[in-house]
Amino acid sequence: MTQPIAFYYGAGELERLSRFDKVVLQADFYTRAELDLLRERGVQTLGYLSLTEDVGPPAPWHRPERNPDWGGAFVHTGDPRWVAHVVDQATGAIAGGFSGLFLDTLNIEQTFPEDLPHLLILIAAIREEARPAYLLANRGFGLLPQIAELVDGILFESFSARWVGTGSYAPWPDDVLEVHAAVAERLLGLDLDLYALDYADNDELCDFARRRAREFGMHCFVSDKVLSRI
Image 1 (cartoon, rainbow, N blue to C red):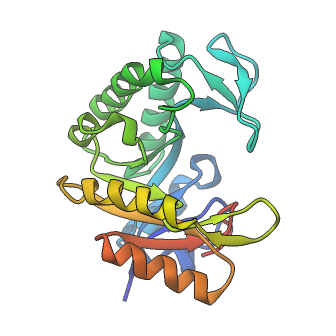
Image 2 (cartoon, rainbow, N blue to C red):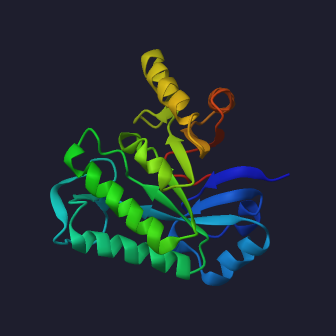
């Protein structure tokens, strides 16, 4: 029996990936032949796409600020050159054999709220160019409810459990879990596929995350911080 979804940012592992209905992968790590093999086995492959951060070389769309966790540069989301760059990446991933896209770095409502309208326009541009490819959005709660018209599913990353920055993992505090629950209840009102991605390193925490996701109608995948586990 296959499992609903996996997030894997390594390469290879086609046999293990074949056990899932959907897999989110780094677009540059897989060849067309590998993606075709997974598709033949009934796996829907989604290529990773960052919409508000850029790990590439210095570019005119970069902001001075960088993501402290991953080092990528925050971008001016409405810059036409960035829009063209991302749409080109999206169409390239689909042309390269992916059957959909995973839209990441959407939660900018606290850092650059002025860019939210630009981000929605960017997602709409991707939707138009990639149609009918499957689009899975990571969070993007600041774009609700409009984003629900543009994507097929929403992922709630770190819904119940998280990496705590000391090489270990833990559930969120109760007050955060309550906030997340309120958002999850809102998502249940949308006609979208719902998924959770949690981070854990022991069976007890994994079971907690999966059980809690089920309570809110989400399929849950649990991995480590760098998504190296299948």
